[in-house]
Amino acid sequence: MTESASGKMIALTHLKRFGIWLAIVLPVFLCAEALRWAVVWGQRGDPVLHYWMAAIAALAIAFLFNVFELIVAWFPNVAWLARLHVPRWTAFEPFFKSSKIPLTIVFLSYLLFYVTQGVDEETRWAIWVNKHVFNFDLFCRHFSAIDTIRIEIVGYVLYLALHGIYNYFCPPILAHSIRKSGGLAREDAALVLVQTIERHGQAIPQSDLAKTIYGFADENRGLLDEESRKVLDERLKLLDQFANPPPDEPPPGEPGSKVGDSSSAVAMAAAGDAAAVARLFPSERATETYYLGVDLFDILYPPVRFLLCVGLVAAILATSLPVAAKLLWVAFPRLGEACMTDLNQVPVDFRDSEWVEFEGAVQTAGPDTSVLVPADDANERWTLKNKNVTVANGEKEQRIFLRIGSVVEIDTIGMGASTAPPFSPAPNARMSKQCSPAGSRCSNHVEICCGSNVIKGKCYGRWPCPKQP
Image (cartoon, rainbow, N blue to C red; front, side):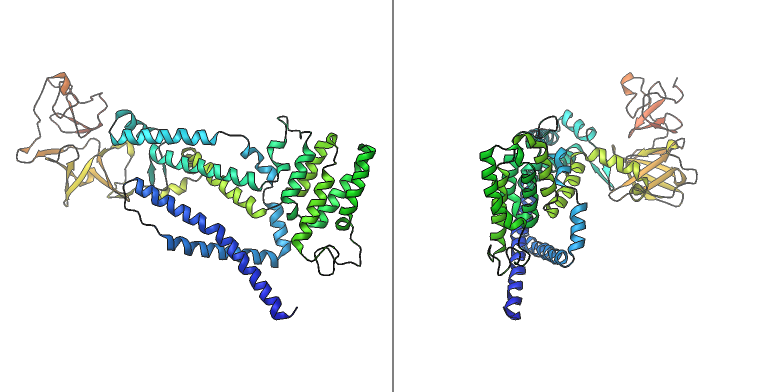
């Protein structure tokens, strides 16, 4: 074969691998884009399908995967170390035992539907659940119950997809279904090993597979009856050419070998002969057969195992996001510094216990005083000295704090100053803007003493102001 022909063959091989990766990655990106489009459309938005961006991203990812394969081929020792250090299939067994993930997804979907419907209809229970259940703050954003349920549904769907990948790629001899509840291998481990060799035997070097199966069968031939030993000897002869090739003969699959010139044909032949021998393994050696399968198949498919590791981390975080967020804040408190409010005009002696939050906005800020507009009455104007007002500029909105003990002048547009609000002895006026016999009034959720207009804090109903006559 000439160098040009060899170069063309190598180029075609790389192009074929690139096409395989593209055929895998492109549908995934298109499905993700279609899902995003469906979510936006379902929320009565105006979705746009970015299929060109999905195609370009798929091309880039497929190219990176192809380059990664070339690097692995150039540095086989590094690839082998990476294969060994990626968690093995047996390590994933506890995560993919029998589960009720579909039922969980259905339950959360119903819960999301009814909570969302209740919030849209302003139902009291739904609003309370949305504001108080599964709420947490992460990366300067507040997540309500609806947001959390959506994220958890995505996490469980991801977990279900990983479950499918695990069941498809994991060799059956390693899956939990072949083990008893007590952790011991079942008596039909030999048959499961046969199924595993038929499905995944081609991924193991032919010589390694043949030598391992040959040696195990030869050690346990004494447990078979005479007829089974005769059959075993005949099948071992077919496997012997892979387990013990003549020193002067090219390895199987190479040009000039008696087995053939196709490496895929050699792998299939070796797997078939090994499976034929494994069918005769005695059932009383089920545990040894299981560990034989572990030795052979536990380090196969390292990219898939790495993908399962990443996916499991993402799924676990998504399905337990409130707990994970709180643990993150506790373990790394400095992460919250960027989310803390940027306080302007903060006095040196600022303490949270000495300030009360004001719901509203700043209308004007002069050199000495500031005028505020409360959220519950746009006709009122609160005037305080600047030293008694603190403004915190967040990313989306301002937060305003008033010093407890400061004096506020409340004006009503068109009515002048309201330094002495009208007195009302009615008991039901204690939580209104009018003064009660307790001497306090509640305006914009802030308790203000009647007569002196001194701010006492939030309206908790304890009424520390001097009682009115």
